[in-house]
Image (cartoon, one colour):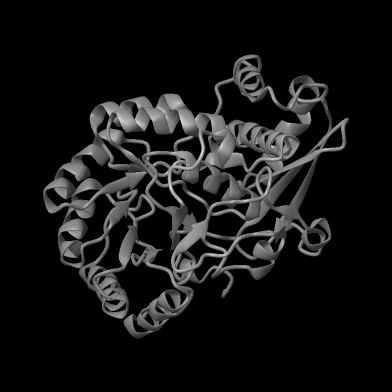
Length: 385
């Protein structure tokens, strides 16, 4: 079996464009993958246009290690987010083909099931006014759908530090959500790399009474020693620190592990070179007793790739999911997409990734010019501008 053709399609929403890649073979099997490149859809397509003829066409889709290795080494340039996204899209689509060829769900080819269901958390649910009563009501709706964990960023447009008034409002929003869902539901506090270390430490102490299940990316991602300093504050409070969605190569994680800078890594499989890299990283993380909670702001393919890793990884914690609360067509584009029931995904049961892609539906939602700025007012409302 050889790869005979690779094509791309873009599905647009008001705040995210999803890049789908279709890999076809000379035996008729087709694999899919998809990612959400932040402001980089055209760049990833350009990267694929240049690299696919040299590294993918005519190659055996079973040889995922060779594909990734050659694309990393033989292009010679140092890989970053664009290259690692392009590589991931091809690699994940190849895994989809492998599963279909062997008539097996992908997780069974990655070591089999470590669990009989996969815990999920909701994101994208707080698209309401930034008022405690509105967030209280929105959180109730999440719990009504069966979720037992939800993530949110209550910090508005804050960067490095913010006013006392803004801090008090942010705490009030967390308190409102906590009051809505109760102590048995996990609150995952997203900080989006907003703060300097001293501000992040202050906020963590202020939120400790609500027992967050983690604080995520409390400082910008470039300085891991600053992250380590924040974790040293959070650790005595029993609050885990999570990070990783903006770390794109395995080598960048070495310093994070050696510093003990985080308790949970949130690598995005679609920006990290794919499933093979993610499984290797999870194994390294386990040596440091670090848990894995894959970042996932994508659609059906990225979700199913994440679930395959989640099912088969010993140190998996919980899986992010947006598509019960944002952009219904994105969810509908994945035919056979499983539902979250009582807070969990069931193990995938169909071969490969386990979903079919509705190409006609994707075509109804062309790429859009998005203006999604996490440091602007009301960014959390996403398409309500």
